[in-house]
Image (cartoon, rainbow, N blue to C red):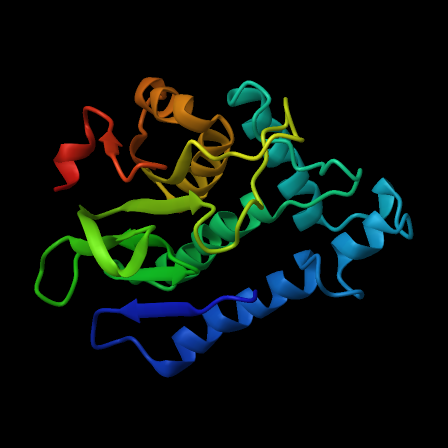
Length: 239
C-alpha cells in the first residue's frame, strides 16, 4: 500500500501465521485499489475498461461507503478527483485496517492493534494490561510527539499536508489549496470512520474541527498553520 504496516497481537495463541494472514490481506487490497498500479481494478475502471456490472463486491462496497460518507460530511468527501478519475484512497486505508482487525477478532483475539501509515485500530489492552498509547506527531517536526492518546476498542487517524503536500482538496473549491491547517487527528469507534472523517474534516479547513465536535462518537485534535492546537471538548477522555 506504499506505507508501513504494523501488527501486534497480545496472547500466547498469537502466531506468525496470524500476522502473515493480515499482511496478505493488505497485499490483496493494494492489488485491487492502488491508483499507482496499472493492473489494479481501480486503474481499469479509470481507463473505462470495466463497467459497473464488472465491479468486484469489494469495489461496490467501497464506492457505496464513499457515497455515504460524502453525504454525511455535506459533500466534503468526494472521491472523484478534479480530473474525473476515481480515487478512493481516503477511505480504503481505514476500511482495510478495520477489516484486518476483523480478521483477528474472527480468529478469537481480543488484544491487538493494526496500524498502517500512522492510522491505527486498537482493540482491548496492551501487554501491560493498559489502553494502547498512540502519539500524535508535531507536523512541523515529525520527530516530536505533541499529544498522546490512550485508546481501546477505537480507531485513530490523522489527515494533513505535512508529509504528502497538498493531496487533499476541498471538493467545493478544488482550485484553492488548504493552507490554514496542517493536520487533523480524529478518534472514532473504529479507524474506518476516524480516517474518512479526518479526511473530510481536513478538506473543510479550519471549520473541520467544529464539524468533528458536532458529529456523534468522534473527537478531534487540529493543528493550524501557526502551530496552535485545538481539540474537541471530549478529546480529554483519551488523555
